[in-house]
Amino acid sequence: MAVRLHLNENPWDLPPEAKAWVADQAWHLYPDEALYDLVRTKVADRWNVPAESVILTNGADEAIALLMLWYRRVAFWRPSFSGYAWVARGWELDAVEIPLGPDFEVPWTAMWEHRDRLLLLDRPHNPSGMCLFGRAELADLLERWQAWVVLDETYADFARDSLTDVFDPDGRLIVLRSFSKSFCMAGLRLGFMVVPRPVRRPLEARRLPFNVNRLALYAALWVLERPELFQTYVNAVCRERQAMLERMARLPGLRVWPSEANFILFRGPLPLEGLVRRLDMAGIRIRPLEDVVGPGAGRVSVGRPEDNARFLDILEAYYAPAVSDRMAVP
Image (cartoon, rainbow, N blue to C red; front, top):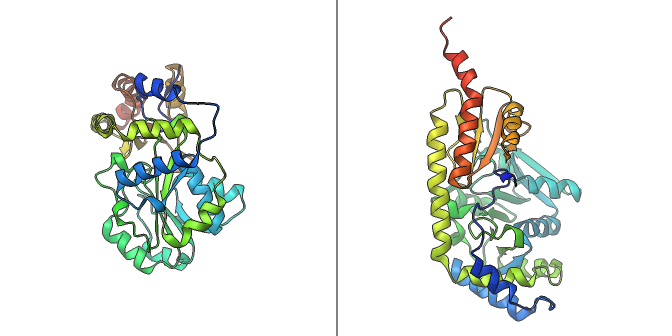
């Protein structure tokens, strides 16, 4: 089986006892509203937000699609999470992509001309892994933006902080979260958004019946009762991320961006195609990003220690000749 370091999945699976408990639930029944409301209440308690503001979705992707299809006039950074552009193109929305600087600098001044659009911001940012703004910048944005601001915190559990607490039921901030990353539930597809009062009704009206499957809801109940267990997974990913960053940074000619997510963006002095071929031969997959970031750019997810070590060995072997050539005395 291939080592999947290209989709930013959690490298650890749900424990067997979680799977057994979920498997023991009734599969032949639709998910009922009582179960939905129970999970929504647990989510609200976990993130300290009003339960009535929580809308559960089929992954964060459904939340993104619901929001963009509802407002239709949208703006987001380029580059950013590819799902934003995918929805905008697929449904032919009125979308503006706001270019970031060469090192992912945010063009705040240029953004203001689009302040009447639904604005989607991912923090940590994908693909850089960096938190491109903080609490002060978000407060200023919410003060001046005329439409709704969507804070996508899919990777926030791996970052130094979260801004979910900025949410105000009467404000303009919408928060997106996912169970796919830190809670090991990517295959079950569960996410949620926290929405202000004025947008709750139109979004609920667009949510399909039974949009979240019954097994995902039961799995959510199981994981939300065990925050300490999943914090150990997050801590392990963060330790591995730091070890990978330090080893990659020692390779001359390789640009590595400081990440606060569960992936690392890098850019090397050679075409990425050769590295991808070598990794494929070893059964390892990464995400090429030359068309998004530039020549030699790729993104690698933080995996299990043994898989990370294999990736790093191949990375170093591939770039070693280029480093030797750069350091040779003419």
